[in-house]
Length: 254
Image (cartoon, rainbow, N blue to C red; front, side):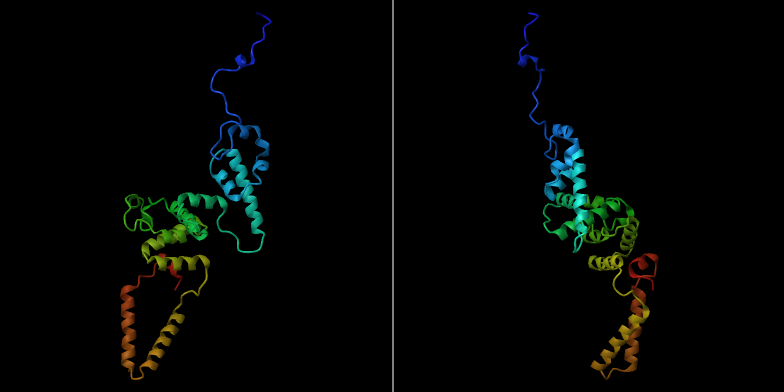
């Protein structure tokens, strides 16, 4: 009939009914909500804890992710104005570090993961021939021994300048020092602390050692002492590397 009213149920389109509130995105926030509330995302998530904001910022819908990053950046900037030691890693990087190494629980450990990954990426992900001694992607895939040096990489990652990081890494690969020695040298180079090496200071230290030996052994002859010094000279001449630019990077100008 022309005037008959079509039932409401029959007027609905066929197909799968939509869920109330729309489907949820990867960060727990629905796509429908994202479209209907573009203007107030910051207001909706402003009261969330930092860890939740970091989770939203690293995955899911782009609009709430951008709002979460902006809120975290503002909180980070506000925290820098307070007294005390500033944080070296923001919430987003901390979340990514946790995802990479979930077994690491301490802040210091997560910082090492973050800096290690930064250096690993900066050095070509283990594919650059210059840095194979530090990280070799093929050996890492096979779980080979000494496939990478995570401790040294974590120290290298603390250099802010990428070119500087690569220069120090290349010097380390040429010298191949022990991990502990490499970390000490890199830390000294980065922080700029500690007295720079010089011939006078080393001479004075050797002289004090000779004086202490003479006190302990008063019968030692001049010939014995001079012969010992000559032996040290010969050994150093044979074992110490030549002075090259890579050495100066880590050891300082002579």
